[in-house]
Length: 346
Image (cartoon, rainbow, N blue to C red; front, side, top):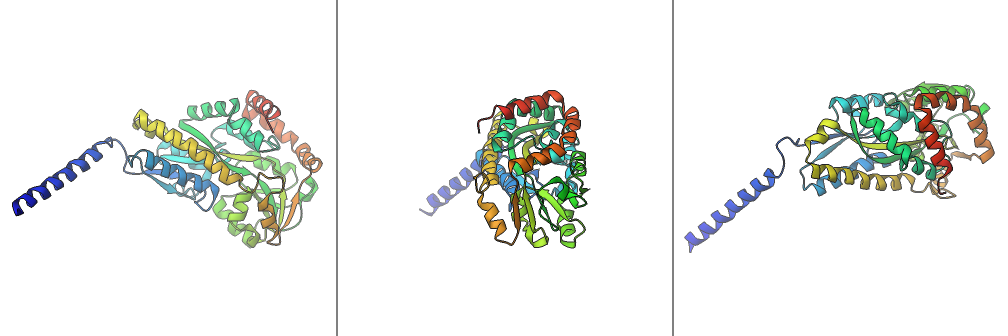
């Protein structure tokens, strides 16, 4: 009886070893034990949440063959957001969900989304990203050495400051504003009479707290998650002057190292994660009376929502910047985007 139990235990152990070996054999030898995903923001923000969803879906659907670790704060490039795309090309970063703004210095077509007052609503964003302009931008990224898979969203960028309500271009005169590292932003806010200063997001929050800068522009999801009302940002203007789509990408060498089946899985996981991330980013904002604005106002913030006529005054003031940068972006691409916006279903 004891001998029989011994044989049974040995057989069970052998089966477990063979099963483990079989599972390990399913992972190709050239796969990394872990892949690095770069993000500007962590999982407390919609941006980082999108990365978490993508990583989880990939792990589940590949049965653990592809494991992804998140690196928020663009920590793989010491917080320098403008170096992120170059680091992906070089293989320092395996995957990323990147900002069209941050990558625009390397891929000029991405400046499309930063043209002031091109996109008046969410339907306009979708018309561009999901239409022919979006396909053209993906082709430009592919030429730039990365593999784009799906769209996400950081959102419309609104303006906050510690000094006063902003209702007309003249109200911006002399304000020190933190902007991202893109020359187009310098041009836009200079045209409005402000004093724009480029700095990373990591540097921006202490600068706001100390009064080194008066204000900033960012999506409301970042304003609320970062609790910017606690760093003197008591005046908020909702003007939707531009929006920042996000792009899910993979380093080309990493992409080509995966089997075709796993590439399909990663691509579809990116598409699914992107859709979920966009829903999260727009939650409470897409309504006629956004709930997020009520929550912000409850913190003692003066919220100004521009009328169509007020918004048009800002658009007119920044039109020379739009026209200048249209040539950099590519006039054909801008024309396609304008046509897509005009034809959108509201």
